[in-house]
Image (tube, helix red, strand yellow):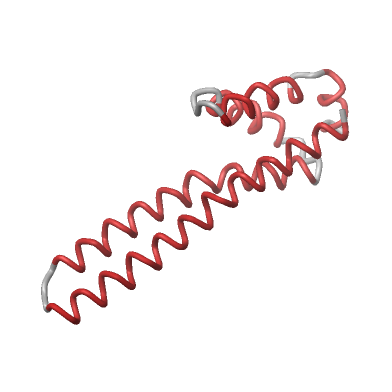
Amino acid sequence: MELHVKILGWLYVLLNAVFAILGVITILGGLAAGVGSSVQHHSAGGLLASGIGSVIGIFLLIVGLPGLILGYGLLTRRRWSRILGIVLSILELFNFPLGTILGIYGLYVLLNQETVALLNN
């Protein structure tokens, strides 16, 4: 089960790093486009686009952060990572199709008695 915990940890880190990176890119892109547009055209439309891009980027960062924390917790065998992992795995079940697969695998790993013993040490 130790290998499964490591695999699950890396899956959560890698998949949620994508959300975090997209969030940062969206924030920076929205800010650049908004500032460039408002300077060039002297209108408020650029600022609106900048605000919308920032909100979407912040949302992506918020979505990715718990998975990154979970991945870290699983890779370093933190006791709290099992409970967080069960909660996030249940939520992933609704994210069809890849999230569903990750959620099922996460629940399989985290509800196993060997994992309970491994993470409680």
